[in-house]
Image 1 (cartoon, each protein chain N blue to C red):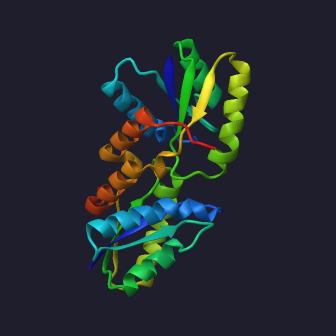
Image 2: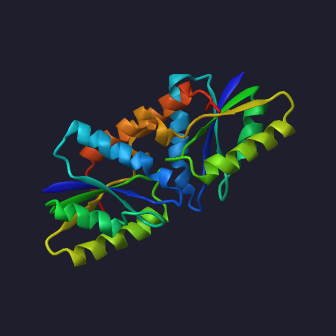
Length: 124
Length: 124
């Protein structure tokens, strides 16, 4: 069964995980059976490996990792392939594939441009 | 005149700036007269102050800063208000306002969810 792992950097402030939960919720709203979990590089849980294990426990055999990053820096180009290889070593028969970061998707950039053009100031 | 500053973290790899240029281009495609420039916290130019100065040189009197961040961590909550205050001290009569980060915008999160659901593997 195919699943999605939302790969993020992680941060000390737990609020930082909110967009990941909101993206997961939006995917679940479109497809209630979708298997989708976050997985963080550092500072935050679930870790990448914990996210993978959680998806495997739910029956995932093929995980598409979607980097929730603006661009492919070293956390996407270097750290992520290593994390994916380690996870495939650990879970026999599991295929992990890597998508381009969200910040490279035309539709996401267009949504950011639209937002920037109409954004108002934060209150308070 | 109103302008937009796309505030980003910055990185050592110059490719990292590409999404910022693509968002700027998308805004210019929608409104060719729009004043919009990137401005980075560190590691990359233009700096926040250089981006502000560039907009002021083009006639900006009111800058809406849009953080191109997934969430409001310390670079948005602590560094950005200080950068904005310093820039207003430096440029008399300039108003700088701060918008919520793109990663908190519902439409951006929806675009990310759609992308994650149909993302294919990177080739090569």
